[in-house]
Length: 268
Length: 249
Image (cartoon, rainbow over the protein chains, first blue to last red):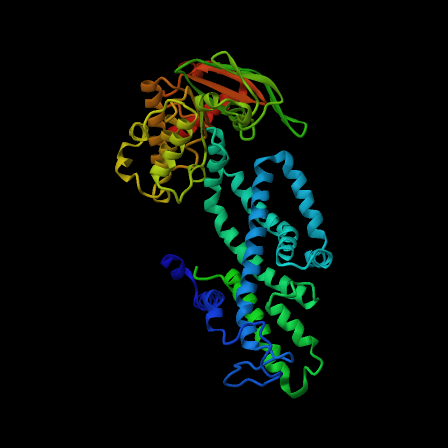
């Protein structure tokens, strides 16, 4: 752990710190939540104040509590979807190399999925399936693995043709021996892909909620943004400043932080 | 005893090997020389099973070996050990020496193949490294790495060692170390060695036989001592001339 930390650049350290804060907020946020997120007994449209830190919406929900609960649901969404699509993509990438016969088939399938923009497919499925949390995550996993598959496959195939893996196969090593050899070269890419997919999943979730296709009962950031935009007197009295901005900043910061962690070169 | 019968292989219509035949007796060492791109490595790979011949047979102790390693039995795979040209790419550099040798031991034990302990194998090829079992592979020199690779190949008690230009990436000292080890193994462990090279050093009589592969065929197959006088093919003569030219300098 200490070793990883010392390799990060200053910018990456800041981003990693923000990430840790997000995790803590997701884990312990509800303890500090002053109101239950679905409690609408407060007066409507209060500006930020001492009781309601970020004010209330037109229904009388406390916005601070909703943003806090958004941490938990949005993080859960993004991490589950990222874990799912990265595992599926990586396993298929390995299978396509280890079993060349089915490899071509998987490759063609991935190409078909890549040609159609995945957000369209996810929107399409989410529109017809029941809007539950599980369905949304499953459709995200199912339609975003091809990207992971392609990147993981190109990395693994370079290692696969290397002599060290050839040696393992020549002495009769089985699949696990090969995976042990590939792991050294594969895990940095897989870690990177995981972060890319996590930030992408937040974008998907927010987009779905924006189109009104997410789970209507979950208080995610996407839903908060949607209901802010739904409110007709949105620009009156600077309501948007405390209604829309907090959730939006949370989403943008999360996506940006993960992207910087992935693309900043770090200390060389 | 290794027997190669009429092995043919072509890449995109271009024939690389056209009915190659030779035999290698138990405990014998054969030097396979030939021009660059002449099919030496292809032949070595066909024997160890990483490439499939278009036609022809590879027999080990009279038993026909199937085309690729995936179809061969673990015993057949263990009998033939291949030493790669580039020792740096043949091992995982972030692993320790113990992990590297342990991999071979683990796979062999799983297949129920009797093997020699890794320390004993290492003692045969690089005794000075016995104290460095927990050092990372990246800390060793090229010559040391290549001798570690040979130690790894000895663990399953192979019948045949194939070395594919295994000294071409090394400096002179590393090359001498590796050749000494191979020579000693042949004497002491009675293992057959098929060594693929691109030039021949006639100054030290280390090998039993020399075969020359040219134009996809074995054009010369002579005992080492008689090669200088009796080699008749123009390519063999050129090999001798170039070798003598450099040794005189």
